[in-house]
Image: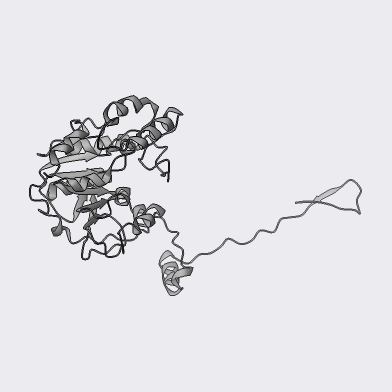
Amino acid sequence: MRVHDPSIPGIVKFKPMRRSPPEVRPPLHRQRQSAAKRPAELVRVSHRGNKPPITPGNWQKISGMFSGRDVVIVGAGGSLCGFKFERLAETSAAVIVINNAIMELPNPDLMVSADVSTKRSAAYQEALGKGVKDWAKPSFPLLCCWPATEPDGNITVCRQASSPTPDPGDKLFCPLSGAGAITAAKWGGAGKIYLLGIDNVRFGADHLQQWLSVVRGSDWYNQEEVSATEARLSRGKMAVHYFSAERGHPADGSQGKYTAHHRAYEKIKNWKMDVVNLSPIAAVPQFPLAAVSELDKLILK
């Protein structure tokens, strides 16, 4: 550091800088021991890779639970804007909900979730007022890959598997919740599997006319909400999820994730299952498309 010496005009002399000695930290195992002694509210997890454990168990509850019954898997894609979720109660099908769909269908036959953020998101606090009394002890079967969640009662916990798991076990092929739900339907011995809201595409103006050609006039859609969605998308807005306009979602602006989704569906497309996708805008070529009116065949007489 340079300082001016007033005794010698025009001369600047240099003064060495004093540096603080480097911080000496104890070994990692000592840090963990120290953290363990502190109150829980003062402990801050800061070590990379130090994730809560996943304790698998209770997967036997999923095995054979559908016994040939048709299953409707409900996602959260934008194609469900205006969908009359309550009408699924009129059908003979079992219902599997994925993540946020629990807000519309709070008493499903099974909920599947791979994303631990589901457990603590604000959107799920809304679901608490729609029939979900206690996430620790849900009234419906829950199959998840959530860390720090104990398998108990209705809760089945599995570790995530990187390759398909056609048979029930402590590992679930669940790189995304949609693949996990299809796997769960297979574990449960489902008959025909119908996919709703599995779009795998950002729903915007490019898909609007395609969507309208199916949902306009359909008894399965609220026509006022269809018109509102049409107006919103015509202005350049997006509806990546059916609730995007009201709540938003961290993935609403993401497109790259869909490539990974395709790879996951590619791995299970050859399973011996009868799967059809009822999304009017679906970009999931692994499963054949069908009109939402296919659900009419499931209406109880």
